[in-house]
Amino acid sequence: MAKRVSIEEFYSSSQNSIPEDLKTGIGHFNVFKLDEFAGPKPKPMPFNRRDYFKISLVSGRSKVHYADKVVPVDEHVLVFSNPQIPYNWEQIDEQLTGYFCVFTATFFHQFGTLLNYPVFQPGGIPVVQLTHRDIDRFTPLFQRMFKELNSDYAFKYDILRNLVFELIHEAMKLQPAHTIANIHSNASERITSLFTELLERQFPIESTGQRMNLRSPSDFANQLSIHTNHLNRALQEVEQKSTSHLIAERVIKEAKILVRHSNWNIAEIAFALGFEETAHFSNFFKKHTDLSPLKSRKIEIV
Image (cartoon, rainbow, N blue to C red; front, side):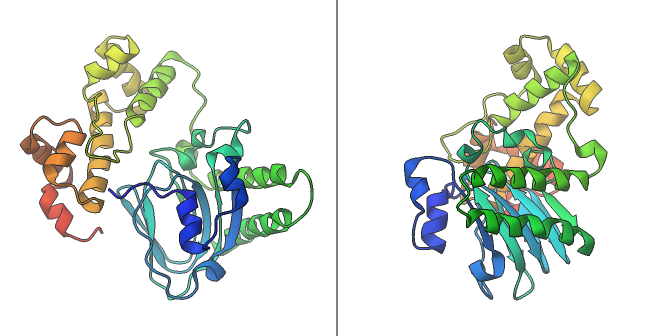
């Protein structure tokens, strides 16, 4: 997997200059018009993780690749990108139009935790298909971002944060109710939340020297100081899936990313994902995808 792209590299490659606030370490925010930024027939965006957040409102035919998924877009889409999940765009129409904003986690320091929102969480829905009516709801928010950013109002960054939150909440209103995370209110939900945090903390895998250490239900139960059966009952109650199933789902998701988008050999991927034998990993991969890792690497993602 290629190294994570920093926001400084984003500006160096696209603007040939780095904004002053990035050099000071304070939070950063900016907004762009897509067609002015990219121009016609832009270079393909590499499939990488970035160390900044990005929200894109895009019109035109394309495909959004994120994590191990591909979402075809026929008309309009709103995409929430975060540092945990790799992504890129595959452009079909010659010219895409729209807007996007980029910002760092420190821009929201003491103003909320963005990763608590489902559109930024693993397993959430970061790609929101939009109708023509929806476009009329979201376009003015980006237009206001330009207005506020160019103003001399002393508290304009507070307004920009509010506009980002409005984008998030309006997008979540368009999603099915079951995709919105509930507030954890009982013991099973609390255990599920802690399990998910432990599982996700091991990802992304970004180097061959990194390794997933918590691999079995008993590993997680020991870490949480509960019996394995107790953990399994809690996860069954909240997620309707066993502990082993949830672990396997997350491992195969990362495995697909590494097999398709890294140049690591299969043994290196197997080791990073906690498998003692490459053959065990290959069998696991084939069981969940119907393809061997090598065959999966050779075919185009569909």
